[in-house]
Length: 312
Image (tube, rainbow, N blue to C red; front, top):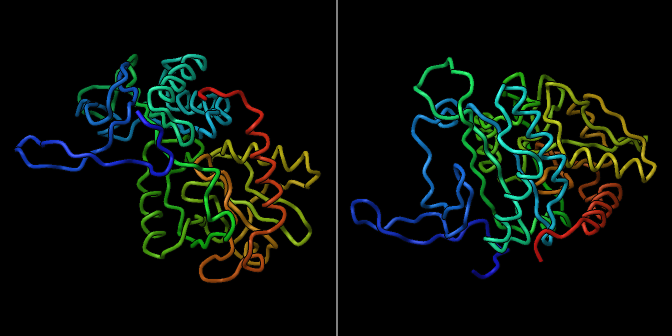
């Protein structure tokens, strides 16, 4: 199987049940309910609680040049999310990593993402659930060079949307309808991301953590609580910023503060970090990526290249 790094999926055709030709996912190999299988052959029972209720959590790790990035921290967050909703973690960190590495090997994945989704399991449809259900595990790769995003050089335009999510945003839930709606608004507006508003204050992005740099040269991001997801890339960027001697302030900040900031950017496993140059049609930080962002981004990639290689 040739290595693929330029697109997330490569469509192939296969006969459908009634004989027509349909476009399906490509020949990626995933890990589904205990077995490595082509994704188009994978099956999840209709009565799975993840499908019926969104009763599950997920995690995603970036792969850069054959390296699993921040993986232990992602798997620790997965364990926390599972614990918060009372699902027993089916694997140790070592076993999760072993499966991820095998997905990389089978797909020749050197650059991209590995997703993990864990639902409570299969049962008759009812809000109540029995203890001890066997969790359903689904894992799959996506192909992309997250470290080669052209938006890094130009900066991203974003919009703000109301934060419509549930109150436990610190759990990486598979119930993502509010984020789907926000990302649809992003597409309609022709921008790259949406930052969510709780009143006048930014909580976080639709799939990212929000940062600003103030005129006093403080790096500000919202403090961890049940209001936001504890971003793993957020954690690493803060560690790098401290090494660089930056003053870190963790607190809520308003939309007005974003527009007054010298820089703004957002972070996630799937983008690393992206500079913000415009919000709701108003210029941010002079309309160009700033030096604080650039130094943190470059230092992040330098750190990544010191990680052990899982697949060459």
